[in-house]
Length: 124
Image 1 (cartoon, rainbow, N blue to C red):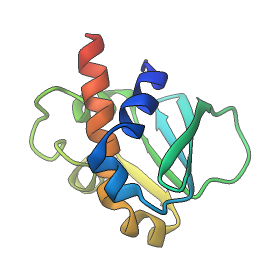
Image 2: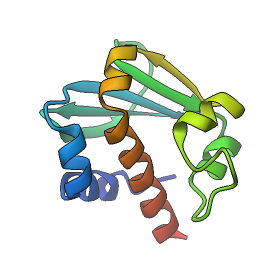
Image 3: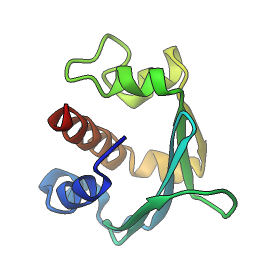
């Protein structure tokens, strides 16, 4: 679904992501329908992005149906899909894991979602 190498390159060269993600060490799982992806972040830099095939711990997980992700990642999202927080309240997004991690690095997560949106819409 994504050019994950493009996501990694763009995020690691993005000044806004870099500022918000500084000192962030985390394993993030993104589930887009049945597709699960693991993002390893160390010191605010994405070190690796790979398919997630099952077990193993994660610090934070963001999951939703393919349809919800399609709406969130549209070039111009509908109301309540323009950001992860309202999408988790009004739509089918589920955020699980370390809430302190989520709150402390929400600006980085928000920017990462924007980067996913940019990469996805560049592919279309």
